[in-house]
Length: 303
RNA sequence: GGUGUCGUAGCUCAGUUGGUAGAGCAACGGACUGAAAAUCCGUGUGUCACUGGUUCAAUUCCAGUCGACACCA
Image 1 (spheres, rainbow, N blue to C red):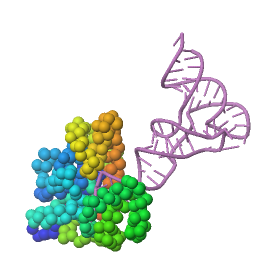
Image 2 (cartoon, rainbow, N blue to C red):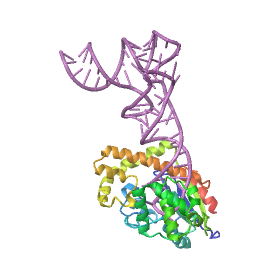
Image 3 (tube, chains in turn blue, green):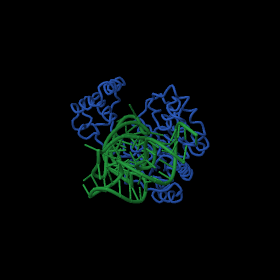
Image 4 (cartoon, chains in turn green, orange):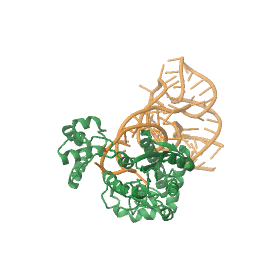
């Protein structure tokens, strides 16, 4: 092969747009493998509610990062970045093109651009800070961050508890300001990146979301969620499709209402995904039906 | 058929002692560096059922009409 350049082809887009099917056809065409960038399809115990590729689909193309984790495992985007880079080294030995497919924008970006390195905070620090949030409210966390890192305090969304907790965690673990360590530099990769966005007119997308939720219900979502009831406190299960069914199982809402809520929350999620991906101008957008155009586009660039 | 209550945003409802109206949810837009399907921020989109009357001014008061509900026949 004359051109030995390596290409990571990102297939991103909102949930239910049809990424899985397109990716499988593309990966088959280019005789390569798929890395999933979907922060919920990682979990082995969550299948129906995450619309994982089914066994037939998984049989067509080798997928990575599908169901490789237990919901009890601690995982984060930095681990994902490192593991994917390791895997890519191997895959690029025998393939010039590898697909990265998923809707988790932060995870996609971590692979493409990298994220800054921070030490893992001690678990007890995290629960200590959460305790403060619970007992004294967010204003206490704001006070703490203002004292420890006024620069980040000025820039951060101070009403967002997750952001405050994270910044405080880093400040207290490292003894240095979060803002000093958060360089936001794009890392160099030794492969080229092609970004493809998949989207549909909104009514069509929303229609597909509704149909997919109905299919999940028909294929046993309630049973799956019921079996995970003891673990509902886990972060992995703080997820659309699961939290609404928990409410139904608590008899707080009807099944009908739970289904409606899942559809609404999935639509909102899809919009947030589009906001994320639209921020980058690097995406070339297609409709999922434009398989030939997408194939030509990739071929043209990789030629 | 009679009496009563109600009719305000996409939905549930508040309100205006008469000066053309506002909450929650939805919707729409946005942010995002180790929880990210998470978390957070911003925006009111309206023939105040309809037709008349009183009034400088009616969504508000009055009458009628239509519709919903309840009770009485």
